[in-house]
Picture 1 (tube, rainbow, N blue to C red):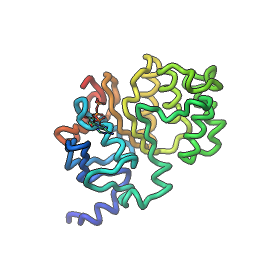
Picture 2 (spheres, rainbow, N blue to C red):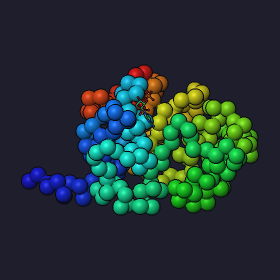
Picture 3 (cartoon, rainbow, N blue to C red):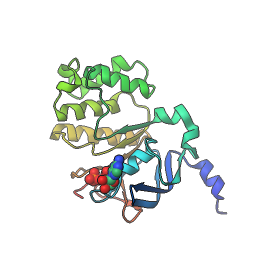
Picture 4 (tube, rainbow, N blue to C red):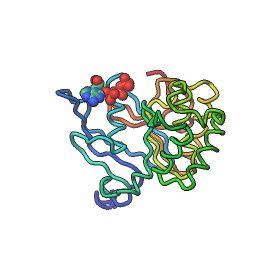
Length: 230
Ligand SMILES: Nc1ncnc2c1ncn2[C@@H]1O[C@H](COP(=O)(O)OP(=O)(O)OP(=O)(O)O)[C@@H](O)[C@H]1O
């Protein structure tokens, strides 16, 4: 027998957007977007420049309000999920969220504490070392190159192994080949642990088993390549 809508909702896990719409000024960017970031999945969000990928990611991260639709966290309204969802959803956008006046290590530890990471200071040092940034850990964020900032922000993903929901806007941007390979490993390991990933990318990157969601057709499908030029 088919499950009723309410039963389906109560069984749903992860972050889900239903019938989402977004307006920017007088322009309706998208509507009717149904997307679910299930545990253990990587979803590549596709769409042309200006189609609204960043806008959708910010809505899913709870950082902006949709024109219409609802957001659910484990089947409950996202807003009602409070701290649990705030700590479980990690958004890394173009701005990287690092604080210019703090050292890289301090800034990363601060972000870790916001996500409820235990012992964030010590872990920040270890995550920066693993990202090849040990010698820059004590430098002020404002003195770092764009690629170093990006790598520093992404080190947040290696602070612990909690299977959170990662929403990553162009995470491969400004990364060199080694950091690109390391990020792909991190994403695949995260999904294997039951974490969820939503990402955009204009670069060709192989991520086995990823799904893709096309914002213009509003359809999800398996992807042979998780990311390719769009
Ligand atoms: N704060 C804002 N105020 C007004 N318009 C905005 C705002 N933010 C974005 N827009 C507009 O909304 C549209 C979608 O922007 P968005 O950044 O979501 O697209 P995108 O698909 O991520 O683009 P890209 O692939 O170029 O990064 C663009 O036309 C943009 O100019």
